[in-house]
Length: 432
Image 1 (cartoon, rainbow, N blue to C red):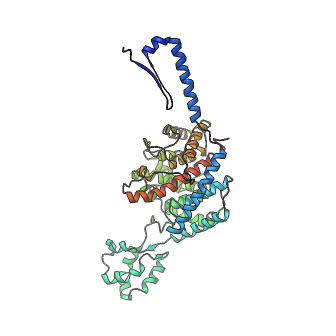
Image 2 (image 1 turned 120 degrees about the vertical axis):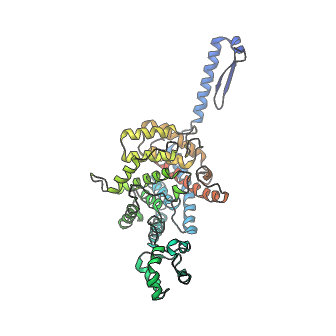
Protein backbone atom coordinates (compact mmCIF):
# COMPACT_ATOMS: atom_id res chain seq x y z
CA UNK A 1 0.00 0.00 0.00
CA UNK A 2 1.29 3.45 -0.85
CA UNK A 3 2.41 5.68 1.99
CA UNK A 4 0.33 8.45 0.40
CA UNK A 5 -2.98 6.64 1.19
CA UNK A 6 -5.50 9.02 2.84
CA UNK A 7 -8.11 8.46 5.50
CA UNK A 8 -10.54 11.31 4.76
CA UNK A 9 -13.58 12.73 6.50
CA UNK A 10 -15.62 15.20 4.49
CA UNK A 11 -18.39 17.51 5.62
CA UNK A 12 -19.66 20.67 3.91
CA UNK A 13 -17.58 22.92 6.16
CA UNK A 14 -14.73 20.64 7.35
CA UNK A 15 -12.40 18.22 5.65
CA UNK A 16 -9.65 16.19 7.39
CA UNK A 17 -6.99 14.21 5.61
CA UNK A 18 -4.56 11.96 7.47
CA UNK A 19 -1.78 10.24 5.56
CA UNK A 20 -0.21 7.01 6.62
CA UNK A 21 3.02 8.95 7.15
CA UNK A 22 1.19 11.17 9.65
CA UNK A 23 -0.24 8.04 11.27
CA UNK A 24 3.29 6.77 11.78
CA UNK A 25 4.23 10.03 13.49
CA UNK A 26 1.24 10.66 15.72
CA UNK A 27 0.37 7.09 16.65
CA UNK A 28 -3.00 5.33 16.92
CA UNK A 29 -4.22 6.97 20.14
CA UNK A 30 -3.50 10.44 18.85
CA UNK A 31 -5.24 9.67 15.58
CA UNK A 32 -8.34 8.55 17.47
CA UNK A 33 -8.33 11.85 19.35
CA UNK A 34 -8.05 13.77 16.06
CA UNK A 35 -10.89 11.80 14.52
CA UNK A 36 -13.11 12.29 17.58
CA UNK A 37 -12.47 16.01 17.58
CA UNK A 38 -13.34 16.10 13.92
CA UNK A 39 -16.62 14.35 14.68
CA UNK A 40 -17.38 16.87 17.39
CA UNK A 41 -16.66 19.76 15.05
CA UNK A 42 -18.92 18.27 12.41
CA UNK A 43 -21.69 17.76 14.95
CA UNK A 44 -21.40 21.41 15.89
CA UNK A 45 -21.52 22.38 12.20
CA UNK A 46 -24.68 20.34 11.66
CA UNK A 47 -26.28 21.86 14.73
CA UNK A 48 -25.52 25.33 13.43
CA UNK A 49 -26.99 24.46 10.03
CA UNK A 50 -30.20 23.04 11.52
CA UNK A 51 -32.13 26.26 12.12
CA UNK A 52 -35.26 25.92 14.23
CA UNK A 53 -38.11 27.95 12.79
CA UNK A 54 -40.70 28.91 15.38
CA UNK A 55 -44.41 29.21 14.78
CA UNK A 56 -44.00 32.96 15.25
CA UNK A 57 -41.45 33.04 12.41
CA UNK A 58 -43.83 31.03 10.20
CA UNK A 59 -46.68 33.42 10.91
CA UNK A 60 -44.45 36.38 10.06
CA UNK A 61 -43.35 34.76 6.78
CA UNK A 62 -46.91 33.94 5.76
CA UNK A 63 -48.10 37.44 6.68
CA UNK A 64 -45.49 38.88 4.29
CA UNK A 65 -46.61 36.49 1.56
CA UNK A 66 -50.26 37.54 1.88
CA UNK A 67 -49.35 41.02 0.66
CA UNK A 68 -47.84 39.58 -2.52
CA UNK A 69 -50.73 37.14 -3.00
CA UNK A 70 -53.29 39.92 -2.66
CA UNK A 71 -51.47 42.33 -4.98
CA UNK A 72 -50.91 39.82 -7.76
CA UNK A 73 -54.21 38.01 -7.31
CA UNK A 74 -56.29 41.19 -7.51
CA UNK A 75 -54.26 42.35 -10.52
CA UNK A 76 -55.04 39.05 -12.26
CA UNK A 77 -58.75 39.52 -11.59
CA UNK A 78 -58.64 43.09 -12.88
CA UNK A 79 -56.43 42.58 -15.94
CA UNK A 80 -57.35 39.04 -17.03
CA UNK A 81 -60.97 38.93 -15.93
CA UNK A 82 -60.93 35.22 -15.13
CA UNK A 83 -60.50 33.16 -11.97
CA UNK A 84 -57.98 30.71 -13.50
CA UNK A 85 -56.79 27.61 -11.65
CA UNK A 86 -53.57 29.20 -10.43
CA UNK A 87 -54.47 32.65 -9.10
CA UNK A 88 -57.90 33.47 -7.71
CA UNK A 89 -58.77 30.11 -6.06
CA UNK A 90 -55.35 30.15 -4.37
CA UNK A 91 -55.88 33.77 -3.35
CA UNK A 92 -59.04 32.66 -1.54
CA UNK A 93 -57.57 29.43 -0.15
CA UNK A 94 -54.43 31.06 1.27
CA UNK A 95 -56.29 33.98 2.86
CA UNK A 96 -59.09 31.84 4.32
CA UNK A 97 -56.50 29.47 5.80
CA UNK A 98 -54.57 32.41 7.23
CA UNK A 99 -57.80 33.82 8.68
CA UNK A 100 -58.58 30.46 10.30
CA UNK A 101 -55.13 30.49 11.96
CA UNK A 102 -55.66 33.95 13.42
CA UNK A 103 -53.59 36.03 10.98
CA UNK A 104 -54.72 39.52 10.13
CA UNK A 105 -56.94 39.24 7.04
CA UNK A 106 -59.28 41.93 5.77
CA UNK A 107 -62.68 40.22 5.91
CA UNK A 108 -64.32 42.85 3.69
CA UNK A 109 -61.82 42.32 0.88
CA UNK A 110 -62.12 38.56 1.23
CA UNK A 111 -65.90 38.75 0.90
CA UNK A 112 -65.50 40.91 -2.23
CA UNK A 113 -63.12 38.36 -3.77
CA UNK A 114 -65.56 35.56 -2.93
CA UNK A 115 -68.41 37.37 -4.65
CA UNK A 116 -66.30 38.23 -7.72
CA UNK A 117 -65.30 34.57 -8.05
CA UNK A 118 -68.86 33.33 -7.63
CA UNK A 119 -70.08 35.62 -10.39
CA UNK A 120 -67.18 34.70 -12.64
CA UNK A 121 -67.90 30.99 -12.25
CA UNK A 122 -71.61 31.48 -12.90
CA UNK A 123 -70.80 33.45 -16.06
CA UNK A 124 -68.91 30.40 -17.35
CA UNK A 125 -71.86 28.03 -17.41
CA UNK A 126 -72.80 28.46 -21.04
CA UNK A 127 -74.21 25.74 -23.25
CA UNK A 128 -73.37 27.53 -26.51
CA UNK A 129 -70.63 29.85 -27.73
CA UNK A 130 -69.62 30.13 -31.38
CA UNK A 131 -65.93 30.82 -31.92
CA UNK A 132 -64.07 31.78 -35.10
CA UNK A 133 -62.37 28.42 -35.48
CA UNK A 134 -65.73 26.62 -35.11
CA UNK A 135 -66.72 27.80 -38.58
CA UNK A 136 -63.84 25.79 -39.99
CA UNK A 137 -64.98 22.54 -38.37
CA UNK A 138 -66.37 19.62 -40.35
CA UNK A 139 -69.78 20.26 -38.80
CA UNK A 140 -69.85 23.73 -40.38
CA UNK A 141 -68.76 22.61 -43.86
CA UNK A 142 -72.32 22.69 -45.19
CA UNK A 143 -72.88 26.30 -44.19
CA UNK A 144 -72.83 28.66 -47.23
CA UNK A 145 -70.36 31.53 -47.07
CA UNK A 146 -73.26 33.97 -46.96
CA UNK A 147 -74.67 32.30 -43.84
CA UNK A 148 -71.23 32.23 -42.18
CA UNK A 149 -70.95 35.95 -42.81
CA UNK A 150 -74.32 36.53 -41.16
CA UNK A 151 -73.24 34.48 -38.14
CA UNK A 152 -70.25 36.71 -37.33
CA UNK A 153 -72.19 38.80 -34.75
CA UNK A 154 -72.58 35.53 -32.80
CA UNK A 155 -68.81 35.04 -32.44
CA UNK A 156 -67.83 34.75 -28.75
CA UNK A 157 -71.33 35.62 -27.48
CA UNK A 158 -72.31 33.13 -24.74
CA UNK A 159 -75.73 31.50 -24.49
CA UNK A 160 -76.86 29.55 -21.45
CA UNK A 161 -79.84 27.93 -23.22
CA UNK A 162 -80.79 26.71 -26.66
CA UNK A 163 -83.78 29.04 -26.64
CA UNK A 164 -81.55 32.09 -26.19
CA UNK A 165 -79.36 31.11 -29.12
CA UNK A 166 -82.35 30.42 -31.39
CA UNK A 167 -83.80 33.81 -30.52
CA UNK A 168 -80.58 35.47 -31.61
CA UNK A 169 -80.48 33.42 -34.84
CA UNK A 170 -83.95 34.68 -35.69
CA UNK A 171 -82.54 38.21 -35.90
CA UNK A 172 -79.63 37.19 -38.17
CA UNK A 173 -80.98 34.63 -40.63
CA UNK A 174 -83.99 34.40 -42.89
CA UNK A 175 -86.72 31.88 -42.04
CA UNK A 176 -85.53 29.64 -44.88
CA UNK A 177 -81.91 29.83 -43.70
CA UNK A 178 -82.93 29.01 -40.14
CA UNK A 179 -84.91 25.97 -41.22
CA UNK A 180 -82.03 24.74 -43.36
CA UNK A 181 -79.06 25.42 -41.10
CA UNK A 182 -80.30 25.85 -37.53
CA UNK A 183 -79.33 22.31 -36.49
CA UNK A 184 -75.81 22.75 -37.91
CA UNK A 185 -75.33 26.03 -36.05
CA UNK A 186 -76.50 24.47 -32.77
CA UNK A 187 -74.14 21.54 -33.15
CA UNK A 188 -71.22 23.77 -34.14
CA UNK A 189 -71.71 26.23 -31.30
CA UNK A 190 -72.37 23.72 -28.51
CA UNK A 191 -69.59 23.66 -25.91
CA UNK A 192 -68.17 20.36 -24.75
CA UNK A 193 -68.90 19.43 -21.12
CA UNK A 194 -65.25 20.04 -20.19
CA UNK A 195 -65.02 23.45 -21.85
CA UNK A 196 -63.98 26.15 -19.39
CA UNK A 197 -66.84 28.43 -20.40
CA UNK A 198 -69.38 25.64 -19.83
CA UNK A 199 -67.91 24.02 -16.70
CA UNK A 200 -67.91 27.05 -14.42
CA UNK A 201 -64.31 27.99 -15.21
CA UNK A 202 -63.03 24.43 -15.56
CA UNK A 203 -62.54 21.42 -13.31
CA UNK A 204 -59.36 22.74 -11.69
CA UNK A 205 -61.14 25.92 -10.64
CA UNK A 206 -64.22 24.10 -9.34
CA UNK A 207 -62.23 21.71 -7.18
CA UNK A 208 -60.01 24.43 -5.74
CA UNK A 209 -63.05 26.52 -4.85
CA UNK A 210 -64.33 23.65 -2.74
CA UNK A 211 -60.94 23.37 -1.02
CA UNK A 212 -60.87 27.10 -0.35
CA UNK A 213 -64.14 26.88 1.56
CA UNK A 214 -63.55 23.91 3.81
CA UNK A 215 -64.18 24.82 7.41
CA UNK A 216 -65.00 28.46 6.64
CA UNK A 217 -68.09 30.58 6.09
CA UNK A 218 -68.02 32.49 2.84
CA UNK A 219 -70.16 33.61 -0.07
CA UNK A 220 -68.82 30.61 -1.98
CA UNK A 221 -70.20 28.36 0.74
CA UNK A 222 -73.77 29.37 -0.18
CA UNK A 223 -75.76 26.19 -0.63
CA UNK A 224 -77.07 26.91 -4.14
CA UNK A 225 -73.66 27.84 -5.53
CA UNK A 226 -71.85 24.99 -3.77
CA UNK A 227 -74.36 22.41 -4.99
CA UNK A 228 -74.01 23.80 -8.50
CA UNK A 229 -70.23 23.31 -8.37
CA UNK A 230 -70.63 19.75 -7.10
CA UNK A 231 -73.23 18.95 -9.76
CA UNK A 232 -70.94 20.24 -12.52
CA UNK A 233 -68.08 18.09 -11.24
CA UNK A 234 -70.34 15.04 -11.15
CA UNK A 235 -71.52 15.71 -14.70
CA UNK A 236 -68.05 15.83 -16.21
CA UNK A 237 -66.73 12.69 -14.53
CA UNK A 238 -65.91 10.07 -17.17
CA UNK A 239 -67.52 6.66 -17.20
CA UNK A 240 -64.34 4.99 -15.90
CA UNK A 241 -64.43 7.19 -12.78
CA UNK A 242 -61.69 9.61 -13.81
CA UNK A 243 -61.70 13.27 -14.71
CA UNK A 244 -59.90 14.74 -17.70
CA UNK A 245 -57.16 17.18 -16.64
CA UNK A 246 -57.52 20.86 -17.35
CA UNK A 247 -54.65 23.14 -18.20
CA UNK A 248 -53.09 22.85 -14.72
CA UNK A 249 -51.86 19.29 -15.33
CA UNK A 250 -52.39 18.74 -19.06
CA UNK A 251 -50.41 21.67 -20.45
CA UNK A 252 -48.72 23.39 -17.49
CA UNK A 253 -46.70 20.39 -16.36
CA UNK A 254 -44.19 18.01 -17.93
CA UNK A 255 -46.42 15.11 -16.94
CA UNK A 256 -47.39 12.16 -19.14
CA UNK A 257 -51.14 12.08 -19.65
CA UNK A 258 -51.78 9.01 -17.43
CA UNK A 259 -50.11 10.75 -14.47
CA UNK A 260 -52.05 13.94 -15.19
CA UNK A 261 -55.33 11.97 -15.30
CA UNK A 262 -54.53 10.38 -11.95
CA UNK A 263 -53.57 13.63 -10.24
CA UNK A 264 -56.69 15.36 -11.56
CA UNK A 265 -58.89 12.51 -10.39
CA UNK A 266 -57.33 12.40 -6.92
CA UNK A 267 -57.73 16.15 -6.40
CA UNK A 268 -61.33 16.14 -7.68
CA UNK A 269 -62.23 13.24 -5.39
CA UNK A 270 -60.58 14.92 -2.39
CA UNK A 271 -62.40 18.17 -3.14
CA UNK A 272 -65.80 16.45 -3.23
CA UNK A 273 -65.32 14.14 -0.24
CA UNK A 274 -65.93 16.68 2.60
CA UNK A 275 -69.28 17.65 1.08
CA UNK A 276 -70.72 14.13 1.09
CA UNK A 277 -73.50 13.22 3.48
CA UNK A 278 -71.21 10.67 5.18
CA UNK A 279 -73.76 7.88 4.92
CA UNK A 280 -72.62 4.28 5.20
CA UNK A 281 -72.15 4.01 1.45
CA UNK A 282 -70.17 6.59 -0.51
CA UNK A 283 -71.70 8.30 -3.50
CA UNK A 284 -71.36 6.67 -6.90
CA UNK A 285 -69.06 9.49 -7.99
CA UNK A 286 -66.59 8.86 -5.17
CA UNK A 287 -66.78 5.07 -5.46
CA UNK A 288 -66.01 5.17 -9.19
CA UNK A 289 -63.11 7.56 -8.66
CA UNK A 290 -61.54 5.38 -5.95
CA UNK A 291 -61.94 2.27 -8.11
CA UNK A 292 -60.27 4.05 -11.03
CA UNK A 293 -57.31 5.16 -8.93
CA UNK A 294 -56.77 1.67 -7.48
CA UNK A 295 -56.27 0.30 -10.99
CA UNK A 296 -53.60 2.81 -12.08
CA UNK A 297 -49.82 2.29 -12.01
CA UNK A 298 -47.87 4.51 -9.60
CA UNK A 299 -45.67 7.43 -10.66
CA UNK A 300 -42.90 7.02 -8.09
CA UNK A 301 -40.46 9.54 -9.57
CA UNK A 302 -43.00 12.35 -9.42
CA UNK A 303 -42.88 13.82 -5.92
CA UNK A 304 -45.91 16.01 -6.48
CA UNK A 305 -47.84 12.89 -7.45
CA UNK A 306 -46.51 11.11 -4.32
CA UNK A 307 -47.75 13.88 -2.06
CA UNK A 308 -51.15 13.85 -3.73
CA UNK A 309 -51.37 10.06 -3.42
CA UNK A 310 -50.55 10.24 0.29
CA UNK A 311 -53.33 12.79 0.82
CA UNK A 312 -55.69 10.55 -1.18
CA UNK A 313 -54.85 7.49 0.92
CA UNK A 314 -55.33 9.40 4.16
CA UNK A 315 -58.91 10.02 3.07
CA UNK A 316 -59.72 6.75 1.33
CA UNK A 317 -57.02 4.18 2.14
CA UNK A 318 -55.86 1.96 4.97
CA UNK A 319 -53.22 2.65 7.62
CA UNK A 320 -50.80 0.44 5.69
CA UNK A 321 -51.42 2.43 2.50
CA UNK A 322 -50.78 5.68 4.36
CA UNK A 323 -47.55 4.35 5.89
CA UNK A 324 -46.29 3.17 2.50
CA UNK A 325 -46.89 6.43 0.65
CA UNK A 326 -45.66 8.55 3.55
CA UNK A 327 -42.37 6.65 3.58
CA UNK A 328 -41.95 7.05 -0.17
CA UNK A 329 -42.55 10.79 0.09
CA UNK A 330 -40.00 11.11 2.90
CA UNK A 331 -37.43 9.06 0.99
CA UNK A 332 -37.72 11.44 -1.94
CA UNK A 333 -36.87 14.52 0.11
CA UNK A 334 -33.80 16.51 -0.94
CA UNK A 335 -30.85 17.16 1.36
CA UNK A 336 -31.84 20.82 1.86
CA UNK A 337 -35.11 19.77 3.51
CA UNK A 338 -37.31 20.54 0.53
CA UNK A 339 -38.77 18.59 -2.38
CA UNK A 340 -38.40 19.02 -6.13
CA UNK A 341 -41.31 17.98 -8.31
CA UNK A 342 -39.38 15.06 -9.83
CA UNK A 343 -36.52 12.78 -8.87
CA UNK A 344 -33.16 14.46 -9.44
CA UNK A 345 -34.66 17.98 -9.57
CA UNK A 346 -33.72 20.75 -7.15
CA UNK A 347 -36.17 21.68 -4.41
CA UNK A 348 -38.86 24.23 -5.22
CA UNK A 349 -41.35 26.10 -3.08
CA UNK A 350 -44.48 24.75 -4.75
CA UNK A 351 -43.67 21.06 -4.28
CA UNK A 352 -42.28 21.67 -0.79
CA UNK A 353 -45.37 23.61 0.27
CA UNK A 354 -47.61 20.83 -1.04
CA UNK A 355 -45.51 18.13 0.67
CA UNK A 356 -45.64 19.71 4.13
CA UNK A 357 -49.34 20.51 3.69
CA UNK A 358 -49.95 16.80 3.14
CA UNK A 359 -47.62 15.60 5.91
CA UNK A 360 -49.04 18.06 8.43
CA UNK A 361 -52.65 17.11 7.65
CA UNK A 362 -52.23 14.02 9.86
CA UNK A 363 -48.71 14.30 11.27
CA UNK A 364 -46.68 11.35 12.43
CA UNK A 365 -44.60 12.00 15.59
CA UNK A 366 -41.49 11.25 13.54
CA UNK A 367 -42.34 14.06 11.10
CA UNK A 368 -41.48 16.86 13.52
CA UNK A 369 -37.88 17.15 12.30
CA UNK A 370 -38.93 16.77 8.65
CA UNK A 371 -41.45 19.59 8.95
CA UNK A 372 -38.95 21.74 10.82
CA UNK A 373 -36.30 21.33 8.10
CA UNK A 374 -38.82 22.05 5.35
CA UNK A 375 -39.96 25.18 7.19
CA UNK A 376 -36.34 26.25 7.47
CA UNK A 377 -35.87 25.74 3.71
CA UNK A 378 -38.93 27.83 2.90
CA UNK A 379 -38.28 30.66 5.35
CA UNK A 380 -34.68 30.98 4.15
CA UNK A 381 -35.73 31.04 0.49
CA UNK A 382 -38.52 33.62 0.83
CA UNK A 383 -37.99 36.66 -1.38
CA UNK A 384 -37.85 40.24 -0.05
CA UNK A 385 -41.36 40.93 -1.38
CA UNK A 386 -42.75 37.98 0.62
CA UNK A 387 -43.04 35.61 -2.34
CA UNK A 388 -41.36 32.33 -3.20
CA UNK A 389 -39.90 31.59 -6.62
CA UNK A 390 -40.63 28.40 -8.55
CA UNK A 391 -38.83 28.36 -11.93
CA UNK A 392 -41.30 27.15 -14.53
CA UNK A 393 -38.52 25.72 -16.72
CA UNK A 394 -38.09 22.89 -14.20
CA UNK A 395 -41.72 21.84 -14.43
CA UNK A 396 -43.49 23.01 -17.58
CA UNK A 397 -43.31 21.32 -20.96
CA UNK A 398 -42.58 24.48 -22.90
CA UNK A 399 -39.10 25.54 -24.00
CA UNK A 400 -40.21 28.74 -25.75
CA UNK A 401 -38.60 31.75 -23.98
CA UNK A 402 -41.70 33.96 -24.23
CA UNK A 403 -43.99 31.24 -22.93
CA UNK A 404 -41.57 30.41 -20.13
CA UNK A 405 -41.54 34.06 -19.11
CA UNK A 406 -45.34 34.09 -18.98
CA UNK A 407 -45.42 30.87 -16.99
CA UNK A 408 -42.79 32.14 -14.56
CA UNK A 409 -45.42 34.62 -13.39
CA UNK A 410 -47.90 31.81 -12.88
CA UNK A 411 -45.48 29.49 -11.07
CA UNK A 412 -44.23 32.39 -8.96
CA UNK A 413 -47.78 32.83 -7.68
CA UNK A 414 -48.47 29.10 -7.39
CA UNK A 415 -45.27 28.50 -5.43
CA UNK A 416 -46.03 31.37 -3.06
CA UNK A 417 -49.57 30.19 -2.41
CA UNK A 418 -48.56 26.58 -1.76
CA UNK A 419 -45.72 27.71 0.52
CA UNK A 420 -48.12 29.83 2.57
CA UNK A 421 -50.78 27.11 2.75
CA UNK A 422 -48.24 24.43 3.64
CA UNK A 423 -46.55 26.54 6.31
CA UNK A 424 -49.87 27.41 7.90
CA UNK A 425 -50.77 23.73 8.13
CA UNK A 426 -47.60 23.06 10.16
CA UNK A 427 -48.48 25.54 12.92
CA UNK A 428 -48.48 23.76 16.27
CA UNK A 429 -46.94 20.66 14.70
CA UNK A 430 -43.31 21.62 14.15
CA UNK A 431 -42.70 24.77 16.13
CA UNK A 432 -42.87 26.14 19.66
